[in-house]
Image (cartoon, rainbow, N blue to C red; front, side):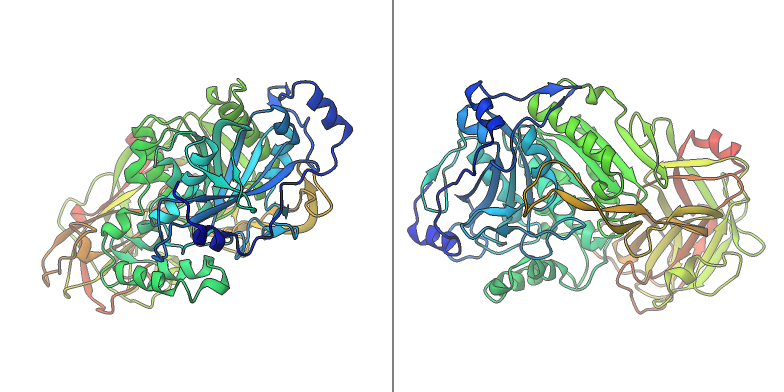
Length: 629
């Protein structure tokens, strides 16, 4: 690594010079030092035999291979480490790493914990429960500041290469492939590391775990992305439509940048806005750099994914596209799908989550043969706190089944065969129509949508996977949008994921996980599931810019009155329509609140004979017929 005194001074300027300190060792810890320290496994899991209060805390700085702020100096990546004191006496431990851009801005977890220095350049408050729980069980925890955030130099690039490579720098150091320094500028090595690292994190942190995995870096053994971004294009776009505000990459970069560096990083944000392609919403090389799905063939780590089926922030297609790519590349994998929105499993299934995560890390990082990979691969929350397991996802036996849009007396109907004679449905695009208006009162004819309803089902119908639609349509304008919504019409108690809390209510009471100190007690606010009885449920949805009907890479104007096929996916789902309920398919033009609208107010004509929704039905056509479709 080249030496650059100015660079190191920049990185360390805000950090007091301090040597690594070891707090007073407990008698139990001293006894372990004298007797060749090693992990203790009982009941198939590692046991808490190491101290927490006397754990070693340090901060390390590693020079990167990139220069995100263009100042002529390579960025320096900072990360905080807490490890058992026994690592000073020969204990070799794996690392659980949470790389994040949020440690000094939005903070982490339902308790909104930020990193907190103790005044000597070490942390006395470590966000989340990983340190409290896993350090006593023989793990080191690394909390890494993504490039351009907290104690790392540079500027955030919202899924750009500097973001994506930040954690790789630390893994290279852990495995002796690059140099690191402490706050005093002294060289430090990870002689205590056993060579295995697991990454975990929610949202942006989950994206960084995936981003690191697709580099193929040696030493990354497993990742646990929770509601993680897999395709930054899909986070801000959908089939050619911009689904977030203008220049969102720059906006998010500003959010995660420390306030005192936002003016400094403005040129980087300006460059992001020049390159993001908001004018068209098309897929470009800018977004290819920010795709982890396309690089999944490089993954060497196992993957344990968690995602909310009703996550309207990082939508479920991030899960499905990455999951499908993992399957194609035979990556060892596990999946939890919940009924909540953008919620950490620590806050919707706490005890089982800690138990499962513990076994997962023990298996992959400590070589504990606990059988977790012999169990069913997938857990799905069917109703509030009602879980079932399956061998895989989509559930084995799922078959893509065409369901055709047909005419009807008030609303249209649905069926397994198309209409016999050509028929059309007409509606006008309304850019201001709300989602509630779109899906409510489906038997009422309105000018701005088409509604298609099944008969009441005679048996439950289970879909598992990614529905797709084909709309055969024409418009009287050269541009318009399309939206399709799949709805369950039927009264039932459901997880109230659209309300505040995204399906959970946070309580004032706490419970504790692991060991703690006076500053970091390892206790967190408890939650309960939020439910409501409703007459309908939006199951899934999808949008498309009609100009991107051929490709998301290029726009082609419509010819007025000419008929085209518009094919696009809805968001993935795993859902059971109960007997007595009706399946609804709603077709609209612009989808206000999901994607930017075009103000053409086109009149659209749908050719029903060739228009359909393809549902991934467990049991295929046989199950569909049994349910009365």
